[in-house]
Length: 184
Image 1 (cartoon, helix red, strand yellow):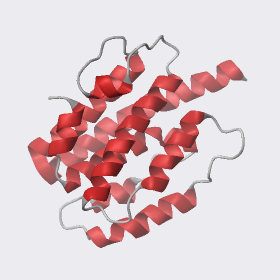
Image 2 (cartoon, one colour):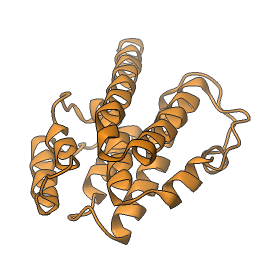
Image 3 (cartoon, one colour):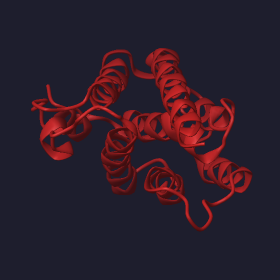
């Protein structure tokens, strides 16, 4: 099943986790630590108060500085993901946010991948991976895996989804570090 189809079929928790996972993997671009979004992940667990989502988002936003003048496109896309997160994790807004995060995260990975990428983000989300660089292909697999884990296991799939996101964050952190060394 394509990423677009998985997003279309996901429930609200799956959508919130999908958007959050994309954002979580891109936190290194914003200078955030590995624990920054942990309260939001905890808010997706069974029995958590969905009404606390907006306040937890505000806390995360306050802990990260907005990218300043001269920030690269990848950092700006990552910050837009955080800023666009809906104050509630229900309804159509969370579906739009999850979809936008998916696109933004794939674009970020495309920008950061030194390998040639002639693939199209929209077509790879629909299942066509021809010409997609390795970093983008790996991000696509992570997005699909997160949605499949939550669709197949519900709230009990959150831990595994977080693990997938953590792995992706480590990969992106290494890419950003290597890029910084090469530029400086």
